[in-house]
Image (tube, rainbow, N blue to C red; front, side):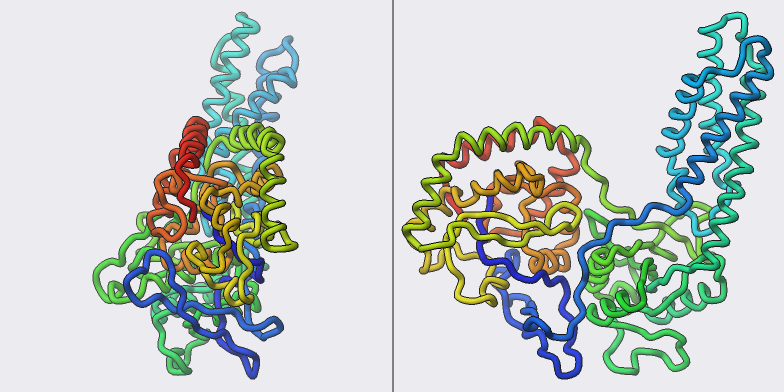
Amino acid sequence: MTTDSSPAREPVRYPAPPVGGAAAAVPVSIPLPGHEGGAAPTAFVPAPPGADRASAPPRRPAPAPPFTAALVAADCAAVLLGGLALAVLLPGRGVPSAGLLLQLTAVLVALDACAGLYRGGSPLPAPAPELPALAGRAAVVWCLAAALVAVRDPAAAGWTAPLTAYAVHLAAVCAARAEVHRRHRRALRLRPRPALVVGPAAGALKLAQALAEHPEYGLRPVAVADPDAGGGEARTPAGAALPVLATPGEVDRAVVRGGVEVALFTGAYAVPGPTAYAEPGPGTDAERRPGAYEELAALLGQHGCAEVRVGPAAGAAPMDRHLWGHPWRRIDAPAAYPGGPLKRLLDVAVAAPALLLLAPVLLACAGAVRLADGPGVLFRQERVGQDGRLFTLLKFRTLRPADETEAATRWSVAHDSRLGPVGTFLRRTSLDELPQLWNVLRGDMSLVGPRPERPYFVAEFSRLHPGYAARHRMPVGLTGLAQVHGLRGDTSIEDRCRFDNHYIDHWSLWQDVVILLRTALSLLRPAGS
């Protein structure tokens, strides 16, 4: 458990350059963990309220792939037609029961979903590339149907009827999916999605031109973003049809004003993935600043843009996934952890009794804070939870910050001379964290998980440390694997990030129990933060 206390503030993810005469963001030096012993990186204090600046909205949920319901309906209709064919070839035994058809439909939909046949990963959807996968899964379903029919009525055993039903099913599903994909392609052409092309300006502008000349892909480039482009008008080549953006502030405003839905990352370098970062390859791209692309990827992800690798960065993409010959591969979101309901059950089973049993301790802490430092026993602070959702974290107040700037930018107050005896004791024993049991009971947090941080520092750490944003694929926690290994307070963010992602990748219910027991033991030798 960590104890970072400061009042709530407006979340800021990326600073924008000043506009007109509005108050600008002021650069200040902030000692960030992991940069001890050298010059601290420059961060930005947000401009005063009302200043004209672009700000990233809360992360938008990814929209469901288009026409998914129509594809599922096509599979269901194909099973029904196959069942009718089975009934015709097995006279006197009637139409297959609704229960049998329901079972076959459930199996088929599950198999197709696991194979990604409802995700629509191809820029130009068509039934031909899907045919082998569809045929294989349909064969499994009708082999199952033949076995069930033989068990129920041995006299009906045989392969003629199931094979005919299989052929009818395959023809029906191919015809239905062909029509769905035709409508999908027509919708892509009529309603193209605004896109931002990210990468070296020369190559990005060529890709944007190719997309403009081929509207069948359903992408309409609105701008090019090259973090390594120089300042001023010279960075946009003469005759270029699109502006070339360089700073996060410019990209932020272009995304908001242009309604950008897709970000296309080009170039020979690999755009960082969810939990790892690939170093740039040889050649001119090796001289580029990968951190700048990491920052743009995080910013575009906050806006809910679908992120896609295009060109050499996409690697060996499937045959049908290309944009006019450029390989196309989605940057998949980090894998969700398994066992969500079990983890939630453990949280409620522990947090509810703990709140009741610790009620006297909570009252004693509240009384001590009230007597030592006056009104305002609890303070509320905005933190970033699972999938980037914001929530209000509760703690016992241990220190009153001097002003909003200090609350917004100060990393740790563990050794602050203003800490009184009560605040020092609460922090050293981690008793100031006990109100977060209510956050756990509400579902804002879990007992075990990556520790939550303020939006300001989430943006900074996501830019500085690859894989930091991937921590938010799991509910944040009261304690975690990093904390039981001593990574609390002013310790390495890179190390914490590594431990947090390792915990998520190898999550188990028993692991949560072990971490809780280790946390309880660590409280017997408190160090605080």
